[in-house]
Amino acid sequence: MTAPKPSPAPASAPLTDASLGELITRISDQTSRLIRDELRLAQAELTEKGKRAGLGAGLFGGAGIFAVYGLGCLIAAAILGLAGPVEDWLAAVIVGVVLLAAAGVAALIGKKNVAQASPPMPTEAVAGIKQDIDTLKPGATS
Image 1 (cartoon, rainbow, N blue to C red):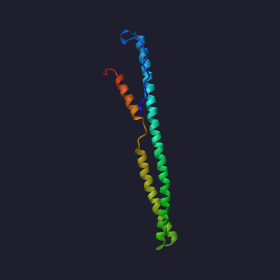
Image 2 (image 1 turned 180 degrees about the horizontal axis):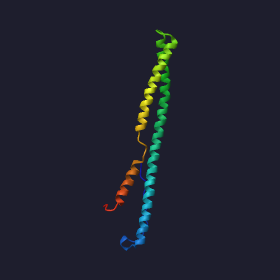
Image 3 (image 1 turned 60 degrees about the vertical axis):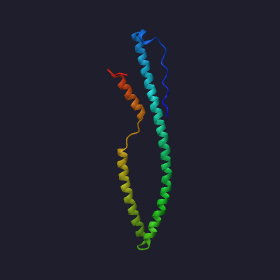
């Protein structure tokens, strides 16, 4: 990802010859340009992360479909395997209870992981803004 190119600074008199009004105007223009550039960077970063997340989610969805069909085959095989020693209906109930218990455990673990997940943030833009704020603080040296 490439950062957006900053807008060119307006051509004007050197800082030593500028009046207080001109300096304030320059600061205002540069600050607004800096904010626009940081927002463009954040937008570009979130767009890239969104594309990657969408592709990953699509691939997970496809894998999930294949897993469901495979799981269905294994469930049928488990029921047929238990149908010999016990009644057919009892074999289906046993396999169903085991599957529901596994689903409950997976749901609890998934809920815990979702709660611990951090929200998606444009980390590069946030770091840039923090650096800009530190630079603008009184007593900061460049």
